[in-house]
Length: 281
Ligand code: NDP
Image 1 (tube, protein in one colour):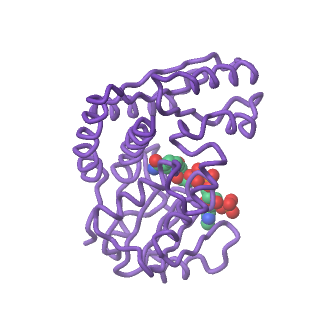
Image 2: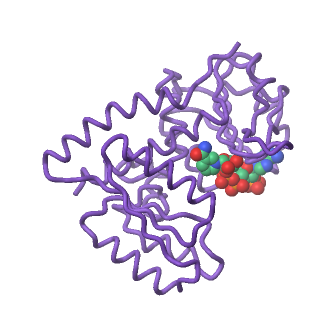
């Protein structure tokens, strides 16, 4: 049976380190604070917000929610974000997406200050990920994947890693981060031919397709590491990943569960990024 890579174990290890870092910052008169920008009150956003606020709280990071009506105009939103950019008591900004249709994310992404852009929305930070420059902020979910592999001592050096998914939120930046760690990375997507075979030949398989249980036993590398980034609902309305967990656990050497895997680490990475932003103040 595969070793289960638990998000809670990774998050706990990160927590201890972060508590000390926050204490050190507070001793210097800096109280790290997350600013959450939310338009309207979508249940998904509220659930993520609750988790992020709680995770920050447990390590001593403050948070402030900036809630605006869904009907806010683009110009008003730009003004509000500029005010938060200038606010010295807020160190990191998390903007919930998708934005309402009348607001152009391609405009807004440039407005968030790169120094406060803790989830890598601003193209300056995206470019840094592609350049292998770690001075910016990589997106939280790909960073959570790297944190998990690192915690479980899974080396990436020279490994054949297959990433299924090429979104700018997960697949593409993750591939760049793995490349930076000297993995040999293959990125797969809906037009990939021989997907099963490509996945099966990986040493580390990372699924970020957003398709419930599409990675069946036939995709799983024997004795390989399987990381499941997907968060989906199955036919019974239960949370599940992209990987057929039951099939995979008998084939892989390591596997992340859903829920309780990558998603659990993502909010810890967010907290870590607030500390990084506050440290640069
Ligand atoms: P997107 O829908 O933006 O991208 C999905 C990617 O997967 C696309 O590149 C798509 O290819 C590819 N893909 C979809 N179906 C297949 C298939 N059958 N075969 C091969 N490739 C396929 O999703 P996101 O990247 O935003 O998210 C991916 C998953 O990760 C979702 O389940 C999401 O909920 C989850 N997620 C989890 C987070 C966490 O904290 N754990 C945070 C963010 C997301 P193509 O480009 O060709 O269309």
